[in-house]
Length: 211
Image 1 (spheres, rainbow, N blue to C red):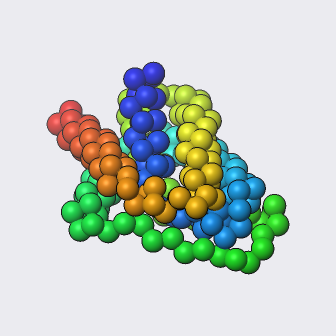
Image 2: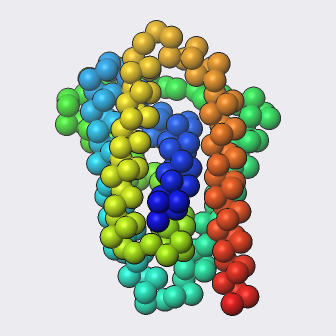
């Protein structure tokens, strides 16, 4: 259990550190609104992460019990998706495509800032597919429903830590220069970690077909 948790948590943390819709939401709020709204947006992302964890724990767990072969299908789907994400990350490095952040100057209340982070993570297709892949990996490793649910707070903690750090960074004058210097390293780590997870899921799917 601990081995599966650690392997997936590292991959998810690297995904959270990589540029994407969640990071851009925090960055835009930090640059346009300041530190407090950015951190409230981070809190919204953390809350959304807990909702995703509960959804995959109970929803996908029930589907796996009713349709055992769905787990094999999701192993292939999740593996291919993770390999696609890894390929896109590594291709971005080769092409030299860095992140471009757009800011917003419209004032946000505390509730609106929180809601922006929550809505972004709940409507992010990348998050939906990632959580499906995470559930497939953990259930495939033999974890129970409650153990997958317990993974949620870990991911929420890393999300709030990482996006909180981005919120602090993007509320300073050196934010864009810092990312411009290190974005290739972040993308490379993200691509390699999810490529390894994707390959593992595909191997598990092939093993199921041979059983």
